[in-house]
Structure formats: structure tokens, C-alpha cells
Length: 305
Length: 301
Image 1: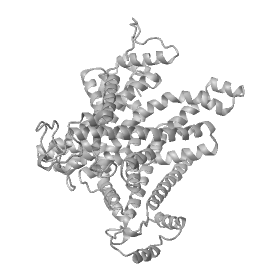
Image 2 (image 1 turned 90 degrees about the vertical axis):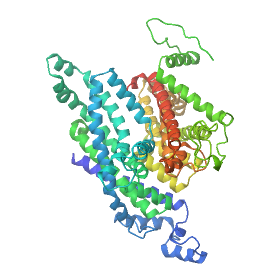
Image 3 (image 1 turned 180 degrees about the vertical axis):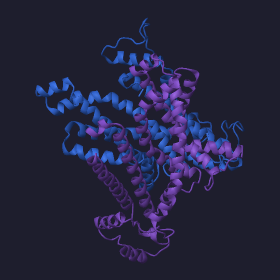
Image 4 (image 1 turned 60 degrees about the vertical axis):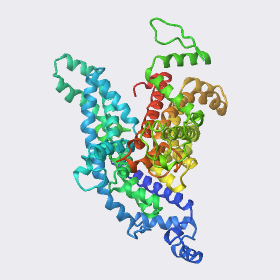
């Protein structure tokens, strides 16, 4: 088990470093960054002077080494616009993103697991058919469009909820729904098919035949045995949730890491982009790591391999 | 083209015998029996038709702005779906947008699919240190959210049709590499391959005569399912201000421009979104049907 943990921790490190490397070279290959530090009408001599002052005239590999050395110490430089510490700005936005992602995750689990279980138990009923149709549609709706529709209905027409911004619980309702929609569809579909598989097993038939009451049958026998695949899928999907959070944040002007990343991309504010990529890659890798641990914990077969 | 399907009592599927004609007939009869597959097929045909002949069907020039006619609601002045903030006809822009979506979906699948397939074959068939390196790269890339990867790459290398296709392909090839590799690994163990190896058939010849033809089905299935992902991803990236740029009528762009008028003109943010949803549904329906028909083992996954 310890070997497994150590191996995976090293892997997390490699993933994050490689992500930074790729983005660093992409940015450098896309053009000379010097003019970004200066006003647009700066004279040629000033640009040249700045280039050597900032070290952009040195060989690329030297610059890369320097960048990595600073990056692993948490120094990504300052924002080109606000001159604040880039990593600090990203970290400051992190709680808002977590708040959104976690509430969406909780909401989708609360809805999708009971829905999937019921759907499987009432297979081919009207309820099941409607649930399945909704999950199919839910997976085909682009989340940003779903967000726009919610704004249109609840903010523009009914005028009961704000169309964007952060701060209060009321502001969280629409972004959470938007972000949760895709996960609800996916988790429901998956819970349903996993439950259908389990319900076909012999031990369920035996339990049923020996008169175990239905609620108990669901909770103790069927659901318990569906949990491993469900946990795995949920853990794997946390990354998608994080990616979706970025788009949702932009639609609702939610003050999280995604909106900051998008603004920095639009402004070509690369220190923030690199710091943002670093944090997102790190979170994503850690989530995968925890998911693997969890999986190995509930399924001892994995550990043996 | 019409194909006569003989009625076979007691069996929903005609017997399959080798040969192209009968395989097509089998596919067609299976399609006739699946309403989702048929729906998907019709939606795809419609999309292809619109992207090929749309410029002659569209009632107006999709780029023509007329300020006196801005923000007309649907069904006014011959504008079936209304006009946008510059007075451009929404229906015509959506038809032109279909072409953009189709080009992006198809081109991305071609590039990502080809590159990923080559990597998958090299990895799975020749193994060795190259396999280890390539699969590590795949692992690393899969550990970053797809949509964010596409967004960051596109923002850095620049916007426009060519660059969004390139960004999507860079983000998408890994899925092909992984699936093709595992298919190749499974094929290698099959008896007809091990027998060929034992009788001394050259490895390259085995690759082209036995491995490649057997990869066709899984690649087609994966491609059809990936197209919907690419179309939605492009719409998202264009919505966020990268990808295809205004004034080009990509659906994501139209939604992005329309969101400023969400409180006054509902039609701007409604119709392009419906188009994306129907496209994604259609392509997914068709892909699911194709998977269930060509590879019944995977059914219900």
C-alpha cells in the first residue's frame, strides 16, 4: 500500500511539472512576451532594453530552467496588469470555485443516486422512461447554454434570482444548478445501469425470495454493491466538474479561478495563466490520486496488482 | 438507393454473410428497427445537407447587417427566427453555423483520429520503450480537463477556424491513442494473429492485412461519438470569446453575442442553443446505435 501511495505521489508531481512545461513552451513559442510588459506605443529601443532586462533574450532552455526553479517555490512572477503576485491572485479566487464545485457535487449526488435507484427498480415504467429521456437530453445540453436559459427564465422573466455575481446564497442557486445539470444526468444514468447489473445477481434474487423488505433490499444489498463503481465515476468526473466550473463562472460572473483564468487569457496575462494552470493541474491530479486511494481502499484486488 | 429487406419471422436481424452488400443491408435494416438510430441518422443527413447547400437555402445573406431591422422578433418581415443586434437574419446565420460545426467536427475527428490511431498502433503493436513514453504522455494529458486544455491552447496559439480545429485535435487525440492501443493489444493475442506470426509472416504485413482492418469498427464508433464532444467544446470555447471569431456565425458565437440582450430579446440566445443540442443529440443517438449494432458486446455501457 505504501509503495502504491509513493508511486502515485511521484506521478502527481510529474503531471503538474509536465503541464507547466507544455504551457510555458506554448506561450514562448507563440511570440515575444516583452511588448506585453510595456505600453503599446513603446519605442523599439525601450522594448529591446526591456527584453534583456527581463531576460527574454537568453536561450529558451535557460529561461525555462529559471521559470521552473521559481515555480516550484511558488513564484510565478507578478500579474502584468495589476502587478500583484500571480499565484496569490489565483489562490484568493480558489475558495469561490470550491464553493461552487462542492455544492454542485452535493446537489447532483442528492438527486442522481435516488433517481437512478428508483429508475432501475421501476424499470420500463413511465417514471423510468422520463428519467432516461432527461438524462439523455441533459448530457447533450452545453452547460453554458443551460446557464443562459436559467438566467433568462429566473432572472429576466420571473425576476426572482440574480443573473450573476457572488456573495450570498441566492447568488449560488443558478450557477450550482447549471454546473450540476450535466453531472446529474451522467450520475443518474450510471447509477441506473449499475443498479440494473446488481439487481440481476443471484444474491438479490435469493434475498428477495427469502422475504427481505424492499427498502432494506435496496439499501443493504443492492446499493451497497453498486457503490464502488459509482464512487469511481464520481471521482473521475470531479475533473470535468472543475472544467465546467470555469465556464459556469464566466456565464454567471462568479468570482472564481475560472473567470480569472479566462480574463488573463484574454489579456495575455501569462503569469496568472501559468499559476492558474499549475493550481488546476495540481487539484486535478490530487483528486485523481484520492480517487485511486479510495478505490484501492474499497476494492482490495487493486492493491494486490 | 433502396434496399429490399426480406421479412424474417422470429428473427429481428437477417443472417449476416460476408460481403459488402449484405453488411450494408444489415446495417440499414438495423437502422430501420431503431428509432433513436434513425432519428440520429436523419439529423446528421439534415446537417450535411445544410452545410453543403445551405447558402442556396438560406433566405438571407448571413453576414448582411441592416441596422433598421435590428432585434426583430421571430416571424416578422420574413425573418422566421428574427434578427440579431445588427439586423442579421438568425435563421440564415444558423444555417451557415451548421456548416462551421460540421467542418469543425469532421476535421477534428480526422486529424485527432489519424494521429491518435498511429500513436495507438505504434504503442500497442511495437511496444517497447516508445509505448511507455507515449502512454505516459497520454496519462498526463488525460489528467487535465479537456475543455480547459482546448481553451488554454486556443488562447495561446490564436483564434480562428484552423486554430480551433488544431486545439481540439491536440486535446482529443489521446482518447483515440488509448482506445486503439487497447484494441491492438487484444488483437495481438488472437489466434489468427499468433498463427500468422508463427508461420513467419512479416510483422508489417500482419499489421496491414490483419490488424488495421480489424481496427476499423472501433475507430468508426469512437469517431462518431467524439464528434458531438468536439462540436459542444467548440461552441463553449467560441462562447467564451476564443475559437471562431465574430462576425462568423458559429453557434457558440451567436450565443455569446446574444447574451447581452438576454433581458430583451429571448430569440438570440434560444435558437442557436437548440441547434447545438439537437446536433449533439443526433450525433450521439447515431453513435450509440452504431456501437450497439457493430459491437454488441459493448451494449448498454
